[in-house]
Length: 322
Image 1: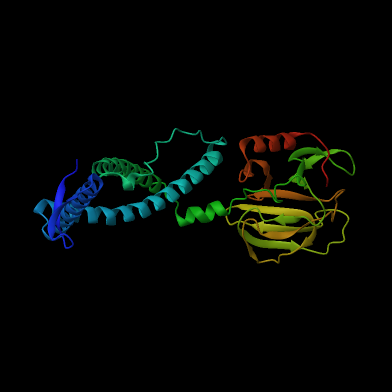
Image 2 (image 1 turned 30 degrees about the horizontal axis):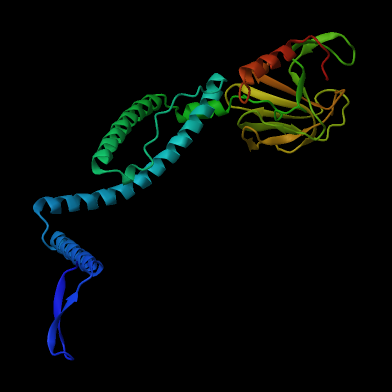
């Protein structure tokens, strides 16, 4: 039987009992509890906002600092990752050039947690200390390496000298450009007797660009030769270190005497002017007025295997093209 309450009945002029259902009582109870919880939560919220303790104020200030530092850390991390990727690429490329083999892949340290910035303060501090330790180690290594590399300085005079050494081929390296005759005793293509070939012959299609093999000054530029013997159209370049290079049997000459040229500069095109039996460029290196074998100078742009193959081709006792 439910609980009762009384109400006044005007028809009978009497107070009569009225039953209260259990459902209504439960609803009233739920409403009371909900209201109480909301009021209590509001009081706690206002208290936390208006009446922070000294510890609370310290934690709030620390949280704001963490939020600000997290954004800065995120940006610095992205910049650092890009720099590391670029350095790895350069390191791999340098390793191939120096050692002619790919750089072995090393096991990389695990990347920072993706949710690091959302982690709790304790985890964030631990990871931050770990990152700072690694960054300090990398910085010390970089300082050490930079100091070591700086000790190998190249003076301006040395730089000028190195750029004046003929170290590349007179033609761009390609399948079309091939060494067909080397320096030394060879068979003459005209009288078929042995003679001293004073340079090397690179065959290529007529019109292929011929390149200066080092910085220097053009001292001779012969163009329009009609002789059916000798060098034909040719260019001599002086390199101010006792070395002179010669490029003969050209089709066209594109430089003038006295002109300064740099390594890789186009000085003419492949032809077969003068005493030549096929389109090619006859290339000489003259050291102190004496022709020397150009192949030992051709180091730039070639691997050790490629240079060894070039020397094998140059050592063959065959017929020259001029």
